[in-house]
Image (cartoon, rainbow, N blue to C red; front, side, top):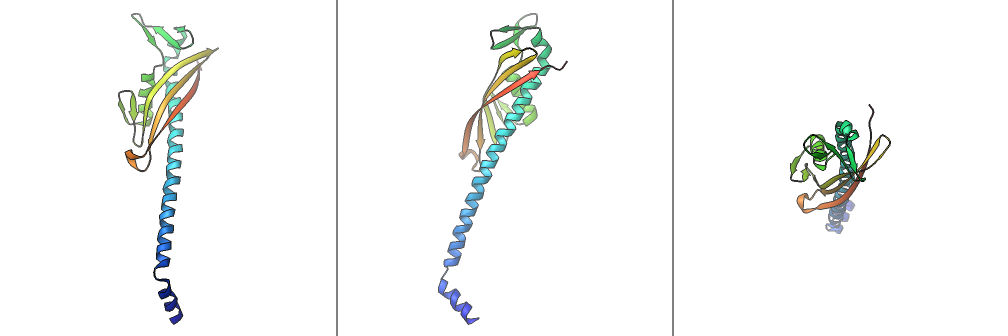
Length: 166
Protein backbone atom coordinates (compact mmCIF):
# COMPACT_ATOMS: atom_id res chain seq x y z
CA UNK A 1 0.00 0.00 0.00
CA UNK A 2 2.87 2.32 0.75
CA UNK A 3 4.25 1.75 -2.74
CA UNK A 4 0.94 2.81 -4.32
CA UNK A 5 0.76 5.96 -2.20
CA UNK A 6 4.34 6.85 -3.09
CA UNK A 7 3.69 6.36 -6.86
CA UNK A 8 0.57 8.54 -6.71
CA UNK A 9 2.47 11.32 -4.92
CA UNK A 10 5.19 11.23 -7.60
CA UNK A 11 2.65 11.89 -10.39
CA UNK A 12 1.62 15.32 -9.03
CA UNK A 13 -1.58 15.62 -11.12
CA UNK A 14 -0.11 14.53 -14.46
CA UNK A 15 -2.72 11.77 -14.83
CA UNK A 16 -5.68 14.11 -14.30
CA UNK A 17 -4.30 16.62 -16.82
CA UNK A 18 -3.76 13.90 -19.43
CA UNK A 19 -7.22 12.40 -18.87
CA UNK A 20 -8.85 15.83 -19.05
CA UNK A 21 -7.18 16.55 -22.41
CA UNK A 22 -8.18 13.12 -23.72
CA UNK A 23 -11.80 13.75 -22.66
CA UNK A 24 -11.79 17.16 -24.36
CA UNK A 25 -10.45 15.65 -27.60
CA UNK A 26 -13.06 12.88 -27.46
CA UNK A 27 -15.90 15.39 -27.02
CA UNK A 28 -14.66 17.54 -29.93
CA UNK A 29 -14.35 14.45 -32.14
CA UNK A 30 -17.87 13.34 -31.16
CA UNK A 31 -19.30 16.78 -32.03
CA UNK A 32 -17.51 16.77 -35.39
CA UNK A 33 -18.85 13.32 -36.32
CA UNK A 34 -22.34 14.23 -35.09
CA UNK A 35 -22.39 17.44 -37.17
CA UNK A 36 -21.26 15.62 -40.32
CA UNK A 37 -23.92 12.96 -39.81
CA UNK A 38 -26.57 15.63 -39.20
CA UNK A 39 -25.63 17.51 -42.39
CA UNK A 40 -25.81 14.37 -44.56
CA UNK A 41 -29.18 13.38 -43.08
CA UNK A 42 -30.68 16.84 -43.69
CA UNK A 43 -29.43 16.92 -47.30
CA UNK A 44 -30.83 13.44 -47.97
CA UNK A 45 -34.17 14.30 -46.37
CA UNK A 46 -34.52 17.56 -48.34
CA UNK A 47 -33.71 15.83 -51.64
CA UNK A 48 -36.31 13.10 -51.01
CA UNK A 49 -39.00 15.52 -49.84
CA UNK A 50 -38.35 17.90 -52.78
CA UNK A 51 -38.69 15.03 -55.23
CA UNK A 52 -41.97 14.03 -53.56
CA UNK A 53 -43.26 17.63 -53.67
CA UNK A 54 -42.48 18.06 -57.38
CA UNK A 55 -44.10 14.73 -58.24
CA UNK A 56 -47.14 15.60 -56.13
CA UNK A 57 -47.56 18.91 -57.96
CA UNK A 58 -47.11 17.19 -61.33
CA UNK A 59 -49.65 14.51 -60.41
CA UNK A 60 -52.25 17.09 -59.36
CA UNK A 61 -51.69 19.09 -62.54
CA UNK A 62 -51.00 16.17 -64.88
CA UNK A 63 -54.22 16.30 -66.91
CA UNK A 64 -53.93 20.08 -67.28
CA UNK A 65 -50.34 19.77 -68.56
CA UNK A 66 -51.41 17.31 -71.23
CA UNK A 67 -54.00 19.81 -72.50
CA UNK A 68 -51.68 22.81 -72.30
CA UNK A 69 -48.93 24.08 -74.56
CA UNK A 70 -45.16 24.20 -74.24
CA UNK A 71 -43.08 27.31 -74.79
CA UNK A 72 -39.85 25.81 -76.03
CA UNK A 73 -38.58 23.32 -73.50
CA UNK A 74 -38.73 25.52 -70.42
CA UNK A 75 -42.34 26.17 -69.47
CA UNK A 76 -45.63 24.30 -69.60
CA UNK A 77 -48.67 26.58 -69.57
CA UNK A 78 -52.39 25.96 -69.45
CA UNK A 79 -55.22 28.29 -70.47
CA UNK A 80 -57.90 28.56 -67.76
CA UNK A 81 -60.32 30.72 -69.74
CA UNK A 82 -58.98 34.10 -68.70
CA UNK A 83 -55.19 33.73 -68.57
CA UNK A 84 -52.31 31.34 -69.09
CA UNK A 85 -50.84 29.75 -65.93
CA UNK A 86 -47.76 27.67 -65.29
CA UNK A 87 -48.62 24.13 -64.24
CA UNK A 88 -45.88 23.14 -61.78
CA UNK A 89 -44.74 26.30 -60.04
CA UNK A 90 -42.00 26.92 -57.54
CA UNK A 91 -44.60 28.28 -55.11
CA UNK A 92 -46.64 25.07 -55.38
CA UNK A 93 -43.54 22.99 -54.67
CA UNK A 94 -42.70 25.22 -51.69
CA UNK A 95 -46.20 24.76 -50.24
CA UNK A 96 -45.98 20.97 -50.74
CA UNK A 97 -42.58 20.98 -49.01
CA UNK A 98 -44.05 22.91 -46.11
CA UNK A 99 -46.80 20.31 -45.75
CA UNK A 100 -44.35 17.39 -45.74
CA UNK A 101 -41.40 18.86 -43.80
CA UNK A 102 -43.15 21.44 -41.63
CA UNK A 103 -41.81 24.82 -40.70
CA UNK A 104 -42.93 28.25 -41.81
CA UNK A 105 -42.79 29.93 -45.20
CA UNK A 106 -41.07 33.28 -45.05
CA UNK A 107 -41.28 34.92 -48.48
CA UNK A 108 -39.54 32.50 -50.86
CA UNK A 109 -37.91 30.55 -48.02
CA UNK A 110 -39.01 27.58 -45.94
CA UNK A 111 -37.64 27.56 -42.40
CA UNK A 112 -38.05 24.26 -40.53
CA UNK A 113 -36.12 23.66 -37.32
CA UNK A 114 -32.40 23.18 -37.89
CA UNK A 115 -32.15 24.25 -41.55
CA UNK A 116 -33.50 26.69 -44.15
CA UNK A 117 -34.53 26.16 -47.77
CA UNK A 118 -34.25 29.26 -49.95
CA UNK A 119 -33.94 30.24 -53.64
CA UNK A 120 -36.16 27.31 -54.69
CA UNK A 121 -36.89 27.26 -58.42
CA UNK A 122 -38.61 24.44 -60.28
CA UNK A 123 -38.52 24.33 -64.06
CA UNK A 124 -39.93 21.99 -66.67
CA UNK A 125 -37.11 20.53 -68.76
CA UNK A 126 -38.74 18.37 -71.42
CA UNK A 127 -41.28 15.66 -72.12
CA UNK A 128 -40.33 12.21 -73.43
CA UNK A 129 -43.47 10.41 -74.54
CA UNK A 130 -45.53 10.23 -71.34
CA UNK A 131 -42.75 11.33 -69.00
CA UNK A 132 -42.18 14.90 -67.87
CA UNK A 133 -38.80 15.94 -66.48
CA UNK A 134 -38.35 18.71 -63.92
CA UNK A 135 -35.27 20.28 -62.33
CA UNK A 136 -35.45 21.95 -58.92
CA UNK A 137 -32.59 24.13 -57.71
CA UNK A 138 -32.35 24.79 -53.97
CA UNK A 139 -29.97 26.59 -51.66
CA UNK A 140 -29.97 24.72 -48.36
CA UNK A 141 -28.53 26.27 -45.20
CA UNK A 142 -27.92 23.80 -42.37
CA UNK A 143 -27.33 25.08 -38.86
CA UNK A 144 -24.89 22.86 -36.99
CA UNK A 145 -24.73 22.36 -33.22
CA UNK A 146 -23.44 25.87 -32.68
CA UNK A 147 -26.85 27.27 -33.61
CA UNK A 148 -27.08 30.27 -35.93
CA UNK A 149 -23.37 30.95 -35.56
CA UNK A 150 -22.31 27.79 -37.44
CA UNK A 151 -24.28 27.55 -40.72
CA UNK A 152 -23.20 25.80 -43.90
CA UNK A 153 -24.90 26.46 -47.24
CA UNK A 154 -25.12 23.87 -50.02
CA UNK A 155 -26.65 24.23 -53.50
CA UNK A 156 -28.76 21.22 -54.47
CA UNK A 157 -30.06 20.23 -57.89
CA UNK A 158 -32.94 17.73 -57.73
CA UNK A 159 -34.05 16.07 -60.96
CA UNK A 160 -37.54 14.55 -60.99
CA UNK A 161 -39.34 12.51 -63.62
CA UNK A 162 -43.11 12.24 -63.62
CA UNK A 163 -44.93 9.61 -65.62
CA UNK A 164 -48.71 9.65 -65.51
CA UNK A 165 -50.19 6.29 -64.52
CA UNK A 166 -53.75 6.86 -65.70
